[in-house]
Image (tube, rainbow, N blue to C red; front, side, top):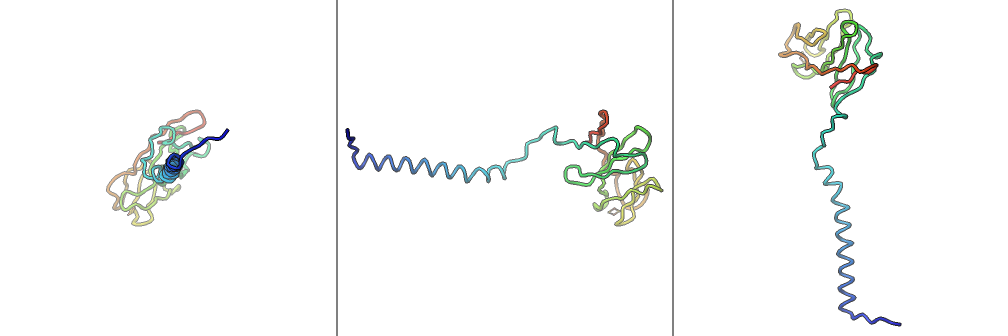
Length: 143
Ligand code: FES
């Protein structure tokens, strides 16, 4: 048994197949561009940083990254935790913890902040940004 397909029918079939293949290749090529340009979806679970409670000894500062920026958590009193942005509010340098003085020092222009981020001296116009800390068992959930 033989089927006879006319040349115009074969051509139409070929163009349909090529069109479908072209659309598939175009969609596959456009997908990475679409993903790159799409806004990042907000995800509550990804906003918090988990720090082990044991990593934050009394009087010590534990630095970490929060949303791509330096942050710090410390335990000024037993069982009391404070988390702050470690970015100086003057011109954006990263503050350093001075354990002996119990305060933060900005190395750029000498700004000084208390253990809870309040400005003590120097040019910083505002306190360090405070981050929410939630104690959950042996973990600190920050952010
Ligand atoms: Fe911190 Fe100037 S950047 S005091």
